Amino acid sequence: MPHFTSSDGLKLWYEDEGEGLPVLCLSGLTRTTRDFDYVAPHLADCRMIRMDYRGRGKSDWAK
Image (cartoon, rainbow, N blue to C red; front, top):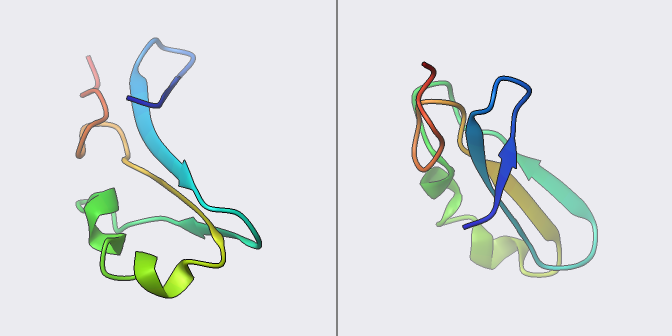
């Protein structure tokens, strides 16, 4: 599982796939990276970068 560890030790999940022009996909505060699953086929020629905020999806909850 790809993740970034924040300065306070929480693991924040991200997904970085594809090549080409980078597109950063940030969901609404209460949503997850899965919101962009329907967009992914349309961005097949791009590098799609998305993440789950802390406490959402596959990221750790704040302590």
